[in-house]
Image (cartoon, rainbow, N blue to C red):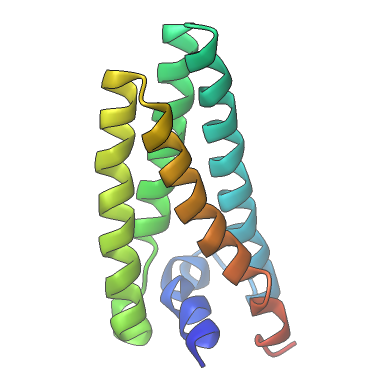
Length: 130
């Protein structure tokens, strides 16, 4: 039930773009994969003290999180959509702090949170009608 709500919470933007249900789930999964890829790259750049590259990857990660947040469907997603919106707001604030402070502990926290949400999406395809 929760996973079905998760899929629905992203539905409105995907429907407006004409993407079918299975493609919508894949698109969200791809966004999470891109987000985690950016976070991993930022980690490497923090460790290498490559400030501009770190900032670029954290900025990309922030844009992905905002895209996920803006695509939530509060009408169909209910509490789950609101909870995800709060989580994404928190992650956005943490990304700014990570960027300012080169905060690896904060980056690991954000990566863990986003990995949990992404992993939840791996069960969604079995819940979406063909």
